[in-house]
Image (cartoon, rainbow, N blue to C red; front, side, top):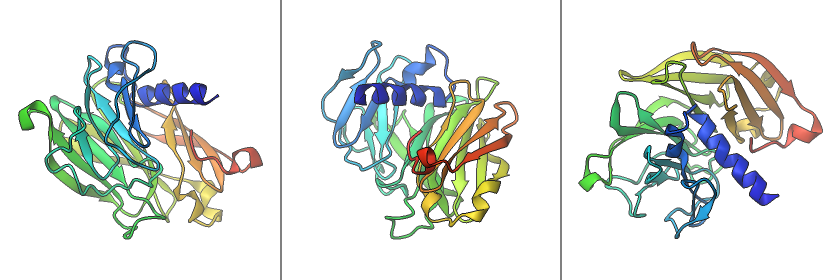
Length: 267
């Protein structure tokens, strides 16, 4: 069962960006847990040497279009393909105990730049207002191994421990989503060649009647086509929404507090 869950999780990572067959190799590597590192580059999971990561929960990993590892992060530190810390690759405002500490997406229009979006941990952080932020990695620097050139730019605060991304219907731009903590809103950002733009905020109607401390934890994930969004609100529910990958509109909330899903965490 663990192997089945493991493979499904990796498929979801690929689906998150709405990638085609060639580009899906950007999700070929997965660094996780305490030194875990596997690759799907050749079609089936292969265990590799130890990574530098040691984390309780979320990790983000990115490869190039040939499936070769570029870098990975626990939302606080950034390591290159040789497991060395990047220059300036520390002090990011994610957290190793955040459900989804970060997500890495290509910078539209520049194949050498990547965004790292990070979210804080509500429960463990000394400052729960660090929120939802982004940093930028430039792969032309440090002899091609990458350098963090922009760090911890604030988008909103406070934030739940949820973050996900999916490709725009135009095949170029990317939607990045987060969830506000305390005011029940899903934030939809469009990432294009001109930067990051807040395009839409969807009020989560059903959460309004619940205490807001429990549901800060849990995953946010897209379906393979990007038309459905699922959110696990830990200790409360599982919610599913329709998503328009052309306009970024979230709609049609379906919300269950059934005991089978009440403690949902992963998706």
